[in-house]
Image (tube, rainbow, N blue to C red; front, side):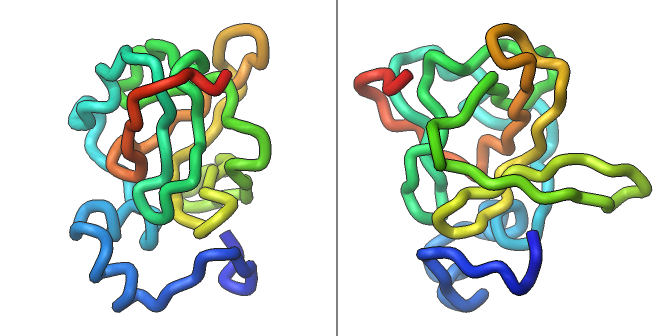
Length: 138
C-alpha cells in the first residue's frame, strides 16, 4: 500500500500498538505474515463474518471460505467494498496485496488459483481478522 494513501480510520503507530497485540501489529501495520497453520480461523466452520482485527470492518462472509490446503484462511471473494489491493514487489516477486479498505491494514494476498465462481484465492492472515458468529452475509 502506498504511504500516501489515506483511509477512513487512521492512527499513529503508537495508537495502533495500544489496540493491537504485537503479532497483529506486525502483520496489519508492518505487512508481516503469520506462520502457516497457526491461526484458529483456518479451522473456523461456523456461519458468520470475518472482520478486520484493526478496525472491525466486515471483510468476508463465512460462505466464501474454502479449504485451500495452504495453512491460511482462504476465501473466494470479499464483501463488496471491504478490501483494496496493491502491487507487492517484496521478496523478489510480484503479488497482489490485500488490505482493509477502512484502515489500510495488511490482510494477505490474492492469487488467481481459487475455486469457482471467482477463481480467486484470498489467502489471509488469521491474526489480521476476528470471527463473529451469526448470519452469513454471502
